Length: 382
Image (cartoon, rainbow, N blue to C red; front, side, top):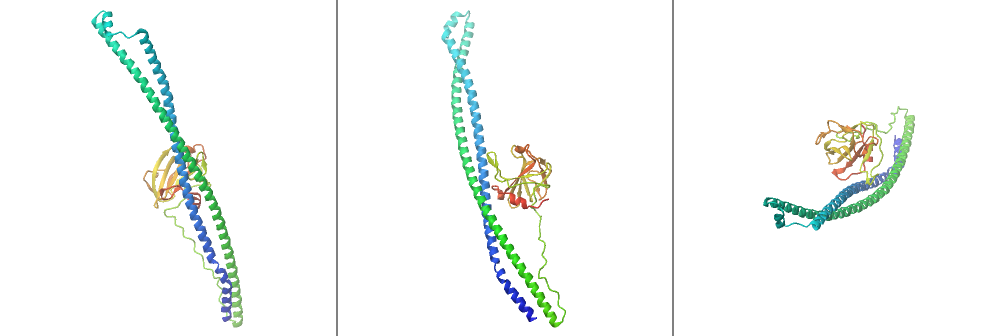
């Protein structure tokens, strides 16, 4: 027995340097966690910049629309002004050629006083019309001046919004470049940590097997000396417990059916950036609540089509767009459980004619969007 103990002590001493390397794994994991935290921060900042860029583009488009409306009013006003000036010119020619009779001339030329009074009334009516014509011309000139100012202001605002949008776009591009660089470094360090861990585990497993072999030999020798039955050797490996997975409250994958998607967050969408991820599935595939929460802004918009928001207990909000329609559970202010069918996959809004898909966004704390791909890819499918 003393021989067996001595062998065990020697084997344990031989593997001590291997186990001493464990702090290196912890350090690598800490570094990867730190880099992942920085990546999450960059993702959030890039999401906010993309949202600001898209909002600036919306304001620029509104300014251009106002400028176009002012230009149309200006053109129409110029046409009306030309007509009013033509009427005034014609009236001035008539007065110059024919002159304006006074009241005495009318009394002497008319057959009766009553006829003369009627003629005076007519003369006054014509005078009032002439004054109104002059006033109309003056009002139209003032209106054209006002429209010209409005047009210049709208055009200047449009240019300012365009400059803001371009600045935001440049900032987003810089953030995305930095995010990709950090992501590449994080992945490389993670791969190195995994490789080092696997190598250490392999060395530990080899040392363990060697120890077990040595222990079996020592026991066999001891049995041979004493001729006593030996107890069976223990493998030294405790049964592993299955990990506990709780689905209470979520998360649940947003679609209940075969789905394809890629990491298309911040991908260009015309002059804007994609603030979410597109989940492609067959039309009519049930769309699910990813967490327990409350629904809000359930309705239709021209860009998003049939859309809704879900606010989870921690304040994170989730946005769904382009649904084909709603389920009875999708009501404004309704409380829903994770996995509840909210609607059905479609292509409404500006997705019309594209393969049916759900545009899905994640907003921690209800703030700016973050990169959803690694989060959604890890969620269990219904």
